[in-house]
Length: 133
Image (cartoon, rainbow, N blue to C red; front, side, top):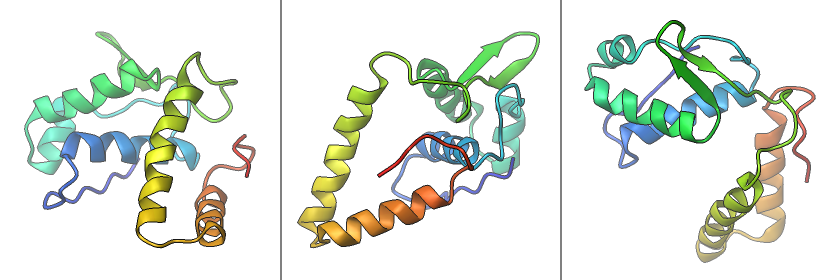
């Protein structure tokens, strides 16, 4: 898995790590059972504090996307083929989506442009994934 971070971004590094891992899974680059780098290794690769990586991994674990244990380390738990979403996911996702759509509206994007952009992003994800417009 290849991760790219913008260390000068206003987006916290731990969220960038979380987002890049989720995107990698959605594109089919990382699948259920694939290992992730250790927190110390990923931190060393980017020259960041390992607690930052740990925060990203904890967030992914709490969201049910990865599992962490002492023997195997961090491993992808869910991918697009895993099955239906876990309870509560859709409601939380809709709330986050509502804010993103509100931001698009405030910045002047019309419905057609938003729908076109969403479709283009979805097209970049793994074949057979279940999201649809």
